[in-house]
Length: 279
Ligand SMILES: [Zn+2]
Image (cartoon, rainbow, N blue to C red; front, side):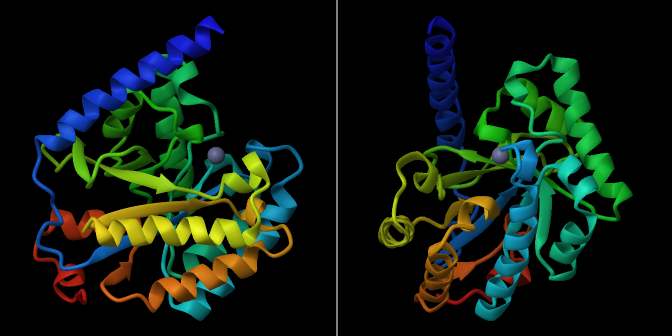
């Protein structure tokens, strides 16, 4: 009880602190005419919930087909140990032209680890993907639980972006370095209501659409929504996902891009990806 309320206080202080860091920086996408929507998956299988690896692998294949049908590229944050156990599935994601990033080495809750163990975790994840022939530049923390030590570890291992839950209105440099620093992308929503409140596929679809509609109405330049293949596996959910994607790609002023592409576009301002973006 005491531990969890301390944790809530710590998270609140951290949130306020970084909202101020964001507010002191200009919106790097200010010149972009529309809203960039980033869709991502946390790929974790057994490392998040026992017995889910098989269904995760099967559903990933179906999601890749849906994204191909809709012409969507997104980000797959993969647990490195999962990638070792499901090499063919992860190779398939890379072959499909999707971005692969890290969801930690083993889905440890990073803030519960020592500083050294956090640094090891970030380094081993990056190394593991490199050994699989996949160069990654981004990270998302399990349970979106992060702190300054996590940011330090990401910078030390050469990560370029991190995506975590929050309310900051645009991407910002959460750490500055000579190489350009670490970008923070803010996650606005996910598919967790399926697990937490047995939300129906129709209600879930409406929730995702509302996030995007609100972002467009508020002229936000970037909004991110996350999914889990193993959560999407239940009846009716993949259909709702495809309905969402079809609605999204038909929406005026909206462009769908993986985190890594957005980070690259920001780093090389006037990047062709953004210059070519529609209004
Ligand atoms: Zn996770």
